[in-house]
Every structure is written in structure tokens, then in C-alpha cells.
Amino acid sequence: MLKFEQYIQEISGSFQNTNWFEFSLNLLITAVLAGTLAWFYIKFGNSLSNRKRFARNFLPLALTTMLIITIVKSSLALSLGLVGALSIVRFRSAIKDPEELTFLFFTIGIGLAAGANQIVIAIVAFVVILIFLFVQAAINGKGVFKSTENMSVNISTSSKDMKAISDILSATFPLVELKRVDDSGDRMTISFVVEASSLAQIETARTKLMELDSASSLSFIEQRSIAV
Image 1 (cartoon, rainbow, N blue to C red):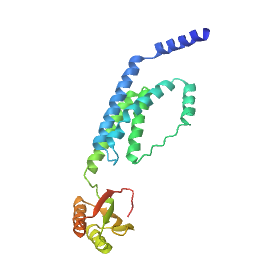
Image 2: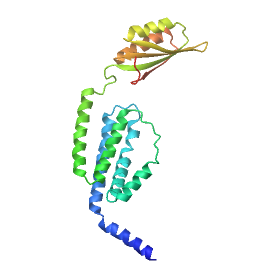
Image 3: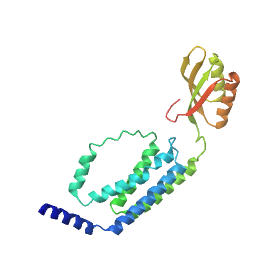
Image 4: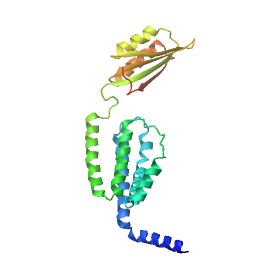
């Protein structure tokens, strides 16, 4: 009974010592900043993945980070316990684009600042960083092609004239490299990597390849990580 009463007293003391107005305000501001960041990422991000789906993680990540920092900031024992707990956590989700990692760190930073009650710094840094990101997005533009894009071209055709196919691509793109050829008898699948600088080049290549074989199946896939 004594331990139970002591436990109740500790909970009551913790409840009374908590500045609930400050906590609620920080929680609200964190939610607003995370929501704004999610909108900015969807609007101006360049990631090829589903940005709307990925941006849904920003709000819970920021609020969870704030909650953890709020709990452990006043206790060395809890801080050490958190380090031990996190040491056994493994995250297996692959980050497909460095931009995704940047925005995740940005979101965590918002939560850290709010949890440490540095909300003014969080707001100022948030505004400044977003301005820089907006200027960068305006300079780079949001066109289909930024300058030169490496693209994977996959062609499935009944034509066996590889030279004609290669000549069409070479006449259209400044650089063409053959990567793979699969011959299944009645059809042949060929993979190239090309450098494309405009949508018109892709349309020209598509038109000429379809003239060579109207039953061809074509796919043009952006491959930023491929060097040609």
C-alpha cells in the first residue's frame, strides 16, 4: 500500500510540474510546421516515389520525436535508457532518394527543437530553410528534364534488325549504350541506356521505332544513378 501511495504521489507531482499550456502550444506548432513541410515536399519535391504517401510520415514523426525529447530531457536515467532501447531498433525501410532522407532529418529537427522547448529557433530555422529550398526549386525548375537525363530504354519487338534499332536511337540521342539483348524466338527484347535532353527526342525515337515495327512495346525510364 505504501508503494502504491508513493506511486500516486509521483504521478500527481509529475502532472502538477508539467506546463501543459507550453506543451500544448509546442505540440500545435510542431503539427503546423510538419504539415507545412509535407505540403512543401509534395509541391516542390523532386523524388520519383509517391511524395504524397511519403509526406504522411512527417506529422507523426515530428510529434513522436517531440514527445520523446520532452519526456527524457529532464532525466539522465531516461536519456540513457532511451539510448539502450534505440540500440536494438532496426529500420529496414529503404530510402530510395537522398531528398527523402533530407526531409526526414528536417522533420526530426523540428520535433527535437520543439521537445527541447526551442520553438522560436525551430520556427526561424524552418522559415529560412524553406526559403532556401524554394529558391533552389525555382532555379532548378520543375520541367520534365532538368538538363540531361540518363534513361533506360526497353524495346520488345518482332524485328530482328538490331542495327536499324541502334541507328534510330543513335540518330536521336547524343549517347547510346547497349545493355542487354534477350531473344525468345519470335520476339526480341533489347535494353539501352541513352542520354536525353528533351521530351521531343523521346517522341522522335518512339515514332521511328513504331514505324519499324508497329507491334513493338516500348518503355522509357529515368535512371538518374546510371552513368553512361
